[in-house]
Length: 367
Image 1 (cartoon, rainbow, N blue to C red):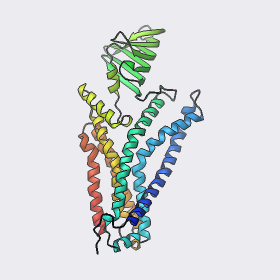
Image 2 (image 1 turned 30 degrees about the horizontal axis):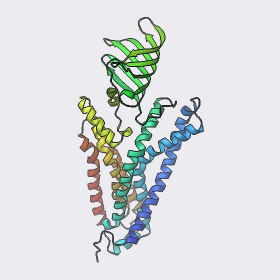
Image 3 (image 1 turned 90 degrees about the vertical axis):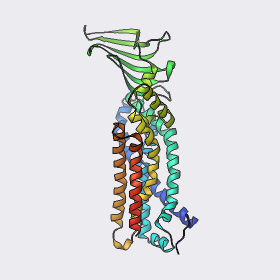
Image 4 (image 1 turned 60 degrees about the vertical axis):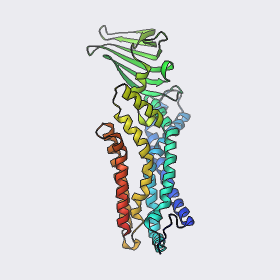
């Protein structure tokens, strides 16, 4: 007799969720450990080359990078963990016992789907509260060659602005509005596209009198006279506003959902391209939900008789479906960033497509 209850057995549901979580977390731990080790091997020399950086700086880097790695590779870890759990269930004929008890494939997967929804909500909160801050901080730190940076939550790094013919680069932008501070400022003074001067300043703040900025510890290179001179202070960057610097670099990875939404509005109001920001905004919702797809795509390894000798083939097929989703998602997001796809299509089309593919494969393999 077929049992039509969503969760026919509470004990069975907890058993499935336990397998799902333990395998996924084990894969995530191993994957994060390996990737963090490789990353640290590549960056440790640069970090320790800065005077004053020691073991604490290395641990600080690890603390900043681990949340980013966890967020990025959690869906992949869930895919592998689910495949490992399903292969074990299949080889031990536990799936056969469940189906003999009247459970359908969707009832077997139901506890995992519910657990995936809970994980997706947790990942979204983790991304918004931890990952964006870590990404912003580690990018600014690396762009500053791992030298100390201001402890500001709204920090931006490597910001470029076009002011008339002149190019302005700020290594670090900290704060907002009148209290904004620029660090490692470079002004490329051009006339008719020809470089006239290069002005480098240690820091810059808005001039209280308005209209320009006060540059401090300034070095000026005159390209016409081929001379370099230094001055303690200089008024420059006329016409450059703090808002221009704020929207000059909008990286969805470094901004939480609501801040990014405000940046999109600011870009559109200024007549600036906002395709990348709008695609990133939509992807902030679809990316955590990709975890929901992993049990469905991996389910092909659970159904079918183990004695048929195709368990590994089914596991490989589940892994291939998961990889195909990640490739399609990255490709679609890139097309959205370029403006070729509408943001909603770029963010949600791969999810909906592979949801239908997973359902079709599940129904076919169940037969």
